[in-house]
Image (tube, rainbow, N blue to C red):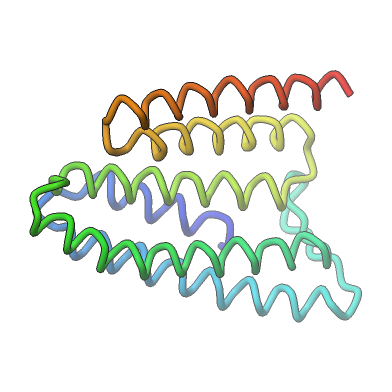
Length: 170
C-alpha cells in the first residue's frame, strides 16, 4: 500500500481536469501524509528486527524503512509547499492549471519510483525504477520551459546517465 499510493495519486491527477487543481493538490498532499504515517509505522516495525516481505519483488528491512521515512517526509513537505507556491504563481500568471497538473503527475510518479527503488528485491526492477526517477526529474527540471531549465535538464540527463552506466559496469 505504501509503495502504490503515489502511483494512485499520479493516476488521479492524470485523469482529473485542469479545473480541479485544488482537488489534485489535496489528494496528493493527503496521500503523502498517509505514506509518511505508514512509513513511520513500517520503520517502527522493522526497528525490532523484522523483515517485511510483501511479495517476491518487494521487501522492507530497517535501512529501507528509514530511507522511506526520509523520502516520505521530503515528499510531504514538497506537496505542502507546492500548494501555496503554485497558488501565488497562478495569480501572477507564471503557470497555468495544466502545468500545475503536470507537476503533480510528475512529482507523484517520481515518489512512486523512489519507493519502488527503495523496497524492491529485484536488481532489474530497481534499475528500471532509478531510470524512472531520472525521467520524471528531467521533466520537473524543465518545468518552467525556459532555455536555461531545458539546458539544465539535458545536463542532468547526461550526468545521471553516465553515472548510472558506471554503476552498471561496476
